[in-house]
Structure formats: C-alpha cells, structure tokens
Length: 559
Ligand code: ATP
Ligand code: MG
Picture 1 (cartoon, rainbow, N blue to C red):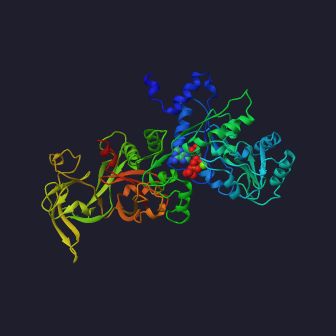
Picture 2 (spheres, rainbow, N blue to C red):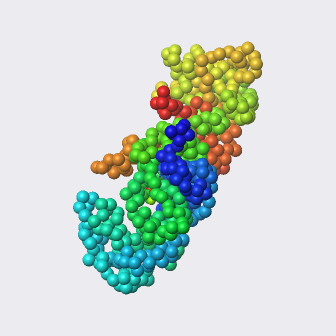
Picture 3 (tube, helix red, strand yellow):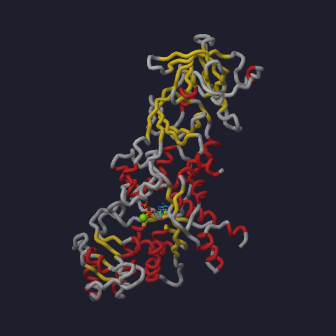
C-alpha cells in the first residue's frame, strides 16, 4: 500500500475501491441526515465533518437531508438550529432536502409493493407481533394476517391513510421472512398511524413511513452514492438493501450504506433524548447552555468552529465503539485560542493592593500589547493607578522559594507595568487579608527601555486598576457529570451523576477595554484561561463564560 492509501480512513478506502471498480467520480454524492428532534451535538459534528469532508475531498455534492418522519418529536425550531450549526461550522450543503418531500412517492411505491404481494396490513397488538418476532436464536412465526388478499390489503391501507383507524390499531408490514437470521428482516413495519400535525406536511398524512423504509429510498431518490451512518444501523443494512432493491432501476445508481462508530465523549451524554431531558427538567438552561455537548452550547462557551473541526479530524473515525477523552476537545480549543485570542487583564478573586509611593490621584495609560509573542494583534491602553486588584492567591505573607508570586519583602512585576514590592498587609478580624501595601520602582515600567525596566524579577502578575476596572459576571464551568461514562451504568440513571457544582458565578474585575467587547468575542484572561462574552450581556452587566482554564491535561498525558 502506498503512503497516500495508508493515510485514508476505512470509508475513504471503500470509496477509492468503488472508483477503481468503475464508479465515475462525478457520481459521488453524500448526505448528512439529521432528524430535527433536537440540537446537534459534538457527535453529530463527527458525522458532519466526515460527510462534508468527503465532499471536499472528492469535489462531490453533500446534501443536508432532514429525516423528518416522526411528527411527534420534530419541530421547525430544530430545523433552523441545525442549519445554523452546519453553516457555522463552515460547511455548504448542495441541497436542503426533507424525507417528508417523498411521502407521496413512498406511498405510491408502497401500493406497488402491496400489489406484488410484498406488504400487508397487520392489526394485531404490538405485544403479539413482538412475540411472533422470535429472538436472535429462535425463528419467528407468521402473523395470521400475513396472507390477506391484495384487495383486502389495499382497502385496509387506504383506510389507514384516510384516518379511519386509531393510532396503534393497524400497521403496514413488509412481507419478507419471519425465519430470517436477521431480526430486522422479519416482516418489519413500514407504516404506522400517527394522528399528529407534521411541521412541514401539516395534516396531509396520518400514516408515516418508518426510518428504514424512508432512509434508503431517500438516498436512492437523491442518488446518494455512499450513505454513511453509525454502527447501530449495521444490522439494518440487509433491510436497507432489500427496500432499495424493490424500487431499483438498473440505469440508476444503487446507494451503499456503510457504518462507522459513534463519537462518544467522556464526562457527558450524547443522546438527544437525554439532552432533551436535561433541558426540560431545568438541569441546564436550554440546549445552548455552555455545559452542554451541543454545538450551540460549545459555541456559546467560546469554542471556535475551527477547534471543533480539528477535534473531529484528530479523533478520527473508527470501526469500533470507543470513548474520546474530553481533554482532547479542550486541548483543541486551547490550541486555537492560544493563536487567535487577544490577551487581556482580569482578576477573578480580588484583593486590593495600595502602592503607597505612587502619587494619589495620578493615572497613567499604559500601552499594552494584546499578545507579546505574536505579530498583528495590536495593543490597547490600560489604565494604571495607585490602587489595583490582584488575585488573592497571588499573595502570601510568607512562602517558600518556589512561590514566584508576591510575598512580604519581595518583588514581582505587574504585567505591562511596574515592579512592586510587598511591604505589609492588613487583615480583618477573621485573619483574612484585606489590603496589601506595596511600593513600586518608578523606573521599572515595562517597555520604557530603562535599566530598571529590564530588571529580571521572578514572577509576573496580572492586575486591574480599582478605579477603572469593570465589575463583571464570570461563569466558571466544571464538568456537567462527575462520572466518566454517566450513561454507562445499568443500575444507575445518568442523572444521578450530575455534578451539583458545574456552574460557579464569580464577580470579577476586568480591564476597561472590554467594555466594548461583543457577544462571542474571545479573550485570554492572562494566567487564568480563555473566556468569551455571553449573550446574557447587557448595557450594565458584562457576562463572560470561561471556555477552558489554561492548564492542559491532554498535552501532559501525551508526553
Ligand atoms: P441521538 O441518538 O443523539 O438522538 P441520532 O442518531 O438519533 O442521535 P440523527 O439526527 O438521526 O441523531 O443523526 C444524524 C446523523 O448523525 C446520523 O447519520 C447519525 O448516524 C449521526 N450521528 C448521530 N450521533 C452521532 C455520534 N455520536 N457520532 C457520530 N455520528 C453521529
Ligand atoms: Mg436518529
């Protein structure tokens, strides 16, 4: 195998083989087929990056197809959110399509199948049908309704369609083989009655086609060459092929279903049903809560499209189920923001410092680079004055030699500003430090070129000027679940593992340049981590989400 072949994933290899065996490249066509019953999550991102990635690689169209065959759970809100997310990730679909566009075609094909004796109406209870289905080791038995005449089937199916029967009373089944080794082939249901308004077809239909009957036919109608889905559909492949075979015309392309392993992520759940539960029960504040593994949640949290794509491609695709460490996702966003986010000053847990030899009433505007290590970021003015805030944990009265921060009698540099020395501190009745008194070296201003400005001191601290800082709300997130695999426990419901401390709200002080920051603007708060402006921000309340702290557990693990 040459180098190029080796670097292909197994799906690309399948496509390459098909091309080698005569499939013209211009026939390649892919699709991403979400059901609009919830918001997209980071697992869907894997499928999006895979399908649209194939489109880019082979210069082939990729459709966005809404698999909307269950009106009970689907809504326009979800359609809109899905489109927004795919666009935001930076992908362009060829056509926006809906399985519901094909309801009439599917119905017409069904009449043909009934006429050919390949489908029948069953009016047994679902329990009875389940019993007859058998087990993987035991063959099924035929339904007593299996041999209804074509005329009777046509009449009953028409009545189903016309709303003459109740929900659950009748289904239409494909007549395949109740003894088939594959359980999905044992006379699967093609249609059920659902008296619900569909978000697109309204009340036109009260029978709705099942997933299997719809999916392959939709792929076929759209002439999708490779229908890529997740492993749980592997056992459906026989049925997919059987359905396509019923309508296949030799002058057309026969779509091929292939499967890859779902993306699972540690410390979260990824099923839309479970995510919906978190939303409905108020565990989180909506689908776009920054703790959610949804694309909208990650975006609000501060993730970039680039970082999500990079994560999807780095984690890759696999043939077997596995769990990706959330640390990799965090690594990807840090890696991106490290290169792109301007660096600013903010203090999350403040203690006041008074610089006793700095003139009262004096203010300076210091010129501070947004990034000292890269070109092109520019700079902004940062006000300095006699009273500043630093982080509480950056000061100790006494500490050993490894504490490179502020301690009594020692010096540190204030980022972009002066060298200060701690002289004394004031405590309240509980012994907590309320004020630190320092002196500064007037000649030590960063960038001034003076001898003192080049003086090396061990630590550099971030700070903000008390008088100028903007008080703002910072939302600090921890994992939503305390367990690595919250839905991997048979005995315990996933909600038992919800982390009660997944959100901490902090009153922080940020530098005044952030006053004009816009929703979704991202910053590095120096020495603290990456933060982004939340949509809850108002004229009077600036709100930040912490995207990730600075320390990187993934990079450490890799070493
Ligand atoms: P969920 O179980 O979260 O509800 P789903 O499979 O029902 O997911 P769909 O809207 O049907 O969600 O999925 C659209 C496409 O995305 C499908 O092709 C599906 O296989 C794929 N997909 C869904 N979840 C994942 C995942 N965790 N990893 C990779 N692909 C996924
Ligand atoms: Mg689905």
